[in-house]
Length: 360
Image 1: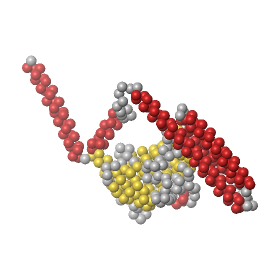
Image 2: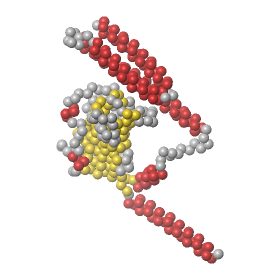
Image 3: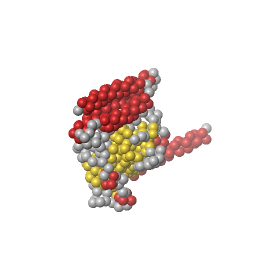
Image 4: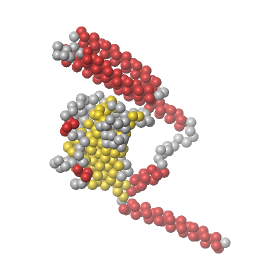
């Protein structure tokens, strides 16, 4: 028992030292966000290393004193959880400080400019035209698919994988990558503008995952799984719905939505998905269509223009719905007539100008 108490005291001392060091790194991050990200990763690695050391030092590991061993492991888990929580809190505070500083700098720059009107500097002329067409003509069409390749899509999360028991995570956790290559994917941390190579470990909420050649598997707090297919972009969030910008994701929950503390709902450009306990997948093609399919449970889908549909599988066959952009003929006709009217007016004006010049 004395050994357990000694290990606990050492653990709390190291935890306090680690958090103190991370607080110093947090201040430096106001000048350089890479230092904050580096400190976050180093802190997580140190937590794991220390936890493994404590576990190895627990008495009764060979069955000499199982009760003391169990108590020691319990204490190790609690200390490890506190360590990760401290690192996450310091990282969140670090990001917040960086964000506040950027906003203050932005406001200071705007005060020096004579014209502070907001401008869409990020939009290209083509994107501006596309957005106008979408707003003018756009209406979302719902098509429920009964047969075809979409309904024959095999699930990526299979019962065989469920045999591998995963412990609940303190955050999103990148646990498995299905390849030995170096093209797994990229990650952009919250508050950062740059993508870096993704590595196995904790993923702070608000991170953007960009997969490349391989699938990426992420574990959630409630033992849920998120499979991100190749060439997809996905934003992980704690409070807001998970955001699929492009590509395909498959999600399976182990806990009911009422008990879940981490977000599993998904949104795309065209719809929001509300989970009512399920195993489902979503594909999004930007500007074209979003597809949702459910293998088990129920999905409630609400489109951005106010339509709604509830989706449940029919026996062993998954239910699939396609949400796509369609053009309203009436609006198209009105706009076409308007354009033709403008052209006719220009032709008349030019002809009138020529007649006037001839008379002179």
